[in-house]
Image (cartoon, rainbow, N blue to C red; front, side):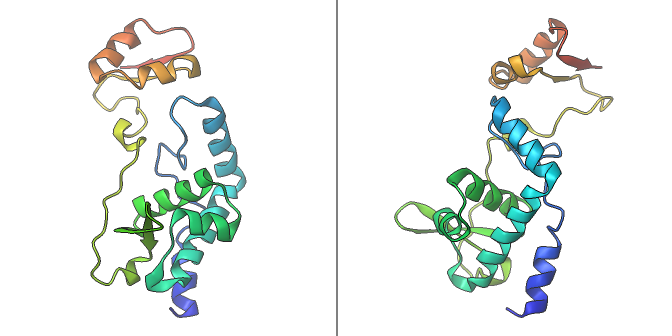
Length: 175
């Protein structure tokens, strides 16, 4: 891949990608994980990590990389590596192949290097909850305080709407 194409690919993620309600994503129900994500998103750590991961996978061409290979090469832990790969995949900058290496780990490649191999769809626990509630979008929405977030993530939309009617003072309800 030419230097110009590589620079163009990483320029698209210069500021970072934040597809989950304006964040790069975090473990549901974990205040520490959410705080870490918001801090790293704001201070540029997330964008730098995403660019490094994208550059590393891209220069590996058709061979691509697994989460472990990325983690080892860039001195990241599993969560950092897999989170960056997942967001880059979700946003179309990388493709996760059905192909596995090392027994269990799926391979990620830049879109130019798929070469007819079967791609796996993106999946994420955060996707299951959809976008962050938006006031005035026509449907009742609810944003839980940290103390109730983990509990409410396990409820159906009907149960969440009911819980909104009984909200604690720290929870927010919009109509």
